Image (cartoon, rainbow, N blue to C red; front, side, top):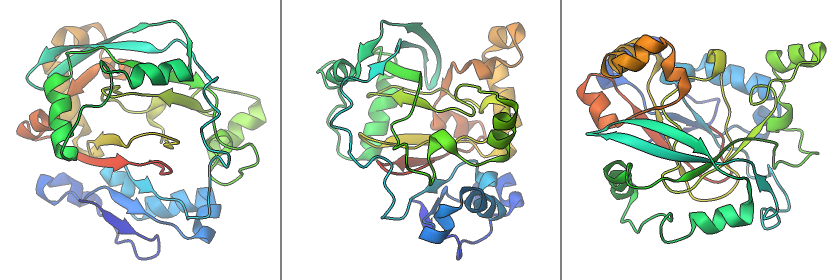
Length: 282
């Protein structure tokens, strides 16, 4: 379960709570007012002042009058999914290594047809927990495609509030003054996923915050390890994948390690999870 909060009545999340695995709060869900939502920097500062960064993840549900793309998504079939990656996963007992290989670019309509085919489509399930078990028990049995790091955005050009293509932040202001563009950092990326498409455990580039908006499709599951347990997680992974660690001490940034929450919990590393639905920010 998770809790819904307006920004005004959200309880403060103390950093010390994250040091005790039993008392780590759930991932907060914020529902800012129209006025709060209109000022991106102020909204993020307020969320941070409430301690959400100690959990490591939060959800923001926009006001009902906010729309990211007014004309919907029926006309995106011609969009190009550039060089989607084929994800191959190896391992067992909840600990896996992911390898990727690029495939030829294709239209979104073709990508969608593959995703909905009998081989790749989401299986029947009773509830989320049932589907989650199916994921971890079959993670190495197929090779899903993932349209990752596709430059661009589907948001309306004239949407000036929480438009990922033009967010107001100190970083974006400095880069704009210097005329610097770093793809995926101060310019947006699109991601096209399907059942089992997975982003391995990672921290963001140069440990920056990241923002993700789900335009269209079925819910997306997020796992997070509270920052207070980051070093313990890194130590666990470096011991298990010793050869990779010896090659590169920052190999987690290669985004290739998948470890189930069950295995992590057994090793004293807590995780929290939440579903992101259409029209929600993480």
